[in-house]
Image 1 (tube, helix red, strand yellow):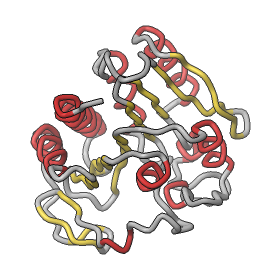
Image 2: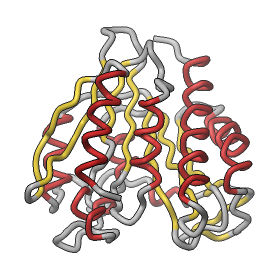
Image 3: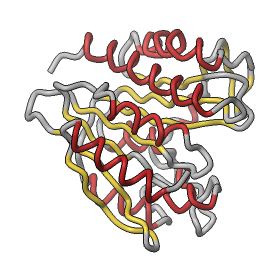
Length: 250
């Protein structure tokens, strides 16, 4: 994946879809891109990120595909971080060039330049829903972790699994990353929901510190064809946001 070509295509697709393209920092010679489309007060606030791990290309590619098809909601306020770890993508590594796993660096004192720049840009902005697009080298199909203050939060996982399943299948494991799982849903123990964790993942940072009552992490299996993985990510995102918008009340 050529990052210069990707960023040029991303910039063009963002403009055509009505997004503002800007940068919130740089790592080496590579800019950290952020996309924003604002409709004003009262519209739902949606946060999407991808590419936190450099060896997970399906997420950034899915963002590009969603932009090209203008598949992200027209009536929402959207912030999209399409490639959080560009240097990792170039190197093909999970971590950034300093060996830091960015998805364990969203505590109150982040170490990585990428994470600090992202948090500085966000400030105290609040969101209604967070979607974080990931991949898993051990994955045996698509799976999802959905945390929600909504009593019907589990229902955000169901449409995503139904939409993504035809592309990659559903992960059958009952233990994923040493946490319980069932039929493609992860069920982390409650003690991971600690706002003071120094190794806080991105999704929980948004939940605890940016008001996101719904956080969804999607995972595609890295061993499957990239086309299938991208389509599974896109299908899951569209299904989740469709349900969210049907339920959203200002």
